[in-house]
Image (cartoon, rainbow, N blue to C red; front, side, top):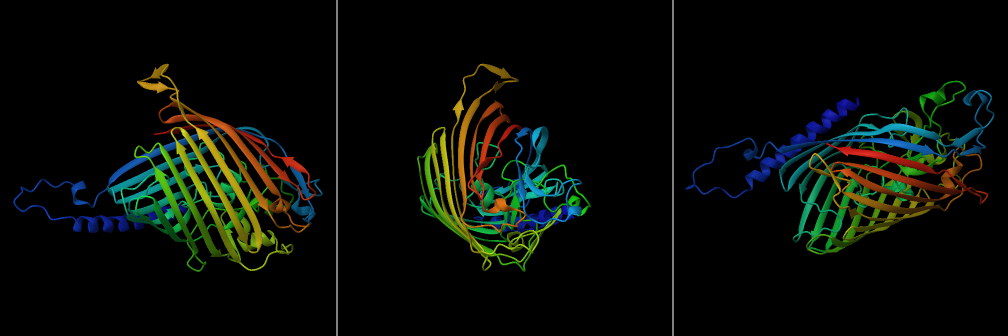
Amino acid sequence: MAVDRIRVGVCVLSFVATLGGLAARAQEAPADPAAPAPAATASDTGVLPKIRFGFEGRMSFRQSDEFRFPVKFGFKPIELPVGQTQAFEETVNQGSHFEVSKLILYVDADWSESLTAHGRLDFLDLYDRNPTSSGKKTDVKELWVRFGREDEPGVLPPGSRAYLKVGKLSHFERQNDRHLESYGLVSTAFNRFNDMGAELGVDAGRHLYCKLSSTVGNPVFLRDPNALAGDNGTPDFLRANPDPELKSGIVILYDTEVEDWNPKRNPQLSGAVGLRFADEGGKNALDVMVFGHQRKLSQGVSREGTFYLGDLQILRGPFSETPLKTIHGNDKREVGGNVWLYLGGFSLFAQYVDQKLAGLPRTGIEAEVAWTFDLPLLWAVDGRQLFPTIAPALRYSKLDNRFKNDPLTPAPSFAWDWTKIDAGLRLGIVPGMDLTVEYAKNDFILANGATRHENEFLSTLRFHL
């Protein structure tokens, strides 16, 4: 079924982009009739794009500290492991583990500077799968066509212009140049995964810009904020006396991945306004954005690999007997702001988000600083510098859940306040290969005021072809 979705998506985007290419060629100025006609090639027709492929793999070593917290929810004895009388929220997979975390294929197609398409197919994405063991192993992460030019944060356009992007695409407020493999609490909770829909961007001169989008909206679900999401509601839980290898995790509410487009769901409407300033060389830049999102939550959204439902049903509790009493309505809205600052090799990204989730208020703040240093040439391999760069990075994130949970909920951690500090460095080995080493100090405050920890060490070797 996943392969069928991939084929359909590729065919649709190819058809739309081909029409766009023909339209772009039709609008070009006619050639001088007196000039000799050059020999036509496939790329000259504007129908066939320039295709580029890329491959990326990541191998990781993970050391996860163990934490276990009893919950008061009344599971039946047959729903618990043999000999266990109480359920727990607990670390997904404690201890030391070597694992292949990602295998990615990239495809880019360029008809012109103003007509491009992009696709990303994850053959394996261990740290984004939710549930970890029974979720989709092959997934189309990105698939879009863009008409017009779009600039990265802090890059000045030559003047006023616009673009339209259609498909599966990232949130415009998301930090896409993270310097660590891990995610902060805010980026996990609010904008980690791509959405599906259309985005319009307008540059009003070189400094002022705005963005509007209409999308499906990422369903609300639950996951551990460390590397592995955890297993909740997987087929193993349907067996008598389950004892899964991967546990539930210490979970937060977050916007999970969009798995399909459902026209019956209310769309998410989003907008942003920003100001940017930069030197012509592009090394020093400041970009400030304010943004907002609004949609209606569905009663329940199905997820592949789990019988738990997302959106309102996950807020009521995976089982409807224990709803949060503070839930009212079905509105989901966020407002927030971003700052990107680049000064040579130094970078700062900061984000603030204020959310109301069916009446449940919560806020988040996150900031990452990093500094990329060029290292002197000491060794070379096959004409390429060995260890060309090093980039230390530090991220602070905080999630304040300003609501109370039901004492009998199976997930009391929904309402805990969290603080996470990620520190590490990324070492370039050769162009196209780097090693990231980092440590996450992940603290949460229980309902009784006690602070507990679920820390994690992560080392990732990443290579591009």
